[in-house]
Image (cartoon, rainbow, N blue to C red; front, side):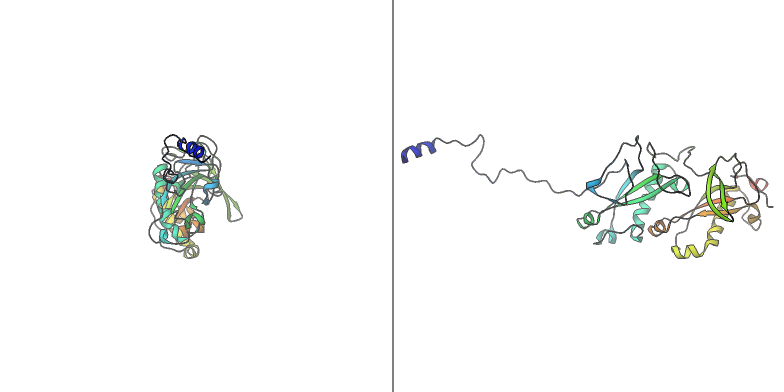
Length: 287
């Protein structure tokens, strides 16, 4: 029996190509990679926090709520922090400034001048703890200057502000409740109206509390834009030519570093039937 067992064992062969060592032929595992969302894609929903488990993109030719224009990386003290910045935090100012410039480059103009809104999406808190340091710049079309909730659209926003665009703010017929502005109804400038978008100024140094206490300063800054837009003197006659309406960013956007204040010419005493751009003193008389 012992001889037979030896004979049988002696006849065993190893499987093809193996060397009998079962510990040295496993493939080396690739290094784990942190999830990072893509730029240049469109998104079916808006979210302030992006998680790999629910991440989804759509073809920009289909209905979508946002376009991921850019993905950047936090650096410096913010990146070194153990805790992820919260939406509305001053720690997002650098990220928002980068998003702002990237969005302008993609659009071909200042997004504040159009029915558009810019939001910053962040990693989840566990992803941040695991080393994720990206931020994403999401651009969306909105319903109006008053309703800034994103609306469904089709097509990329790349180049959307080049040439004539229905997204760009123009003329409005404001609706009032008593002496208070209710909402701005957009109209053609050839239709009777009382307001027209003239531009954006940036309030760099004020806190939100200071800004809300100094509305008169905002009106003065807008009046200067009105004078330049209509090509009339910025002097004591200007308040007799037009008034102003202004729309600041939200408090959250302000704290993140968006200080772009939108300014509108307001005609209290007469309806206008043309654009006031460059009309001069005769086109916008003091009355």
